[in-house]
Image (cartoon, rainbow, N blue to C red):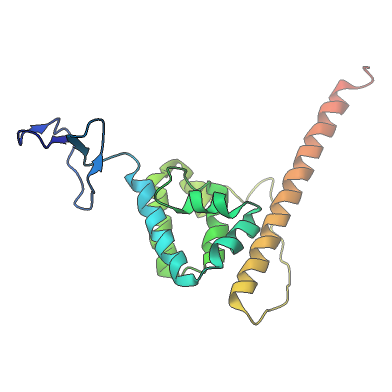
Length: 184
């Protein structure tokens, strides 16, 4: 929907802007976009940004280390100023490292799923266990620092996912070579 600031006339009122919409510059200096398709992404990023600010300055670094990425990448996926969505495979790790309270986690995940409904089953954990998968329990030391504990758990989870992905890829490669048989 575009609103002209020229003669006071309204142009293209096909959508109703949400009450929280902020006017942003669009094509010309005299028109403003009152709604854009990235608002749902910006909403969950604004929530996450607010939660991370309360957790302290080391949160982004801890997330970067747990995900094996740079702080710059973490800034891009957590800042509403960037359009880059948070990859679904990183959401749970980010939630864990950020130490979100249950109500904060619910708010964030609801906003994330609203922005990316096609990723709901991956985020909610459906489809991650069942045929072809197994659950493993691991005992780890209880650290006195809760942030360090969350970081340790996220690093172990990432390591396990990475090793499993490597093993699955190797298994697929071996199967492909066996199918070729004795062919040169």
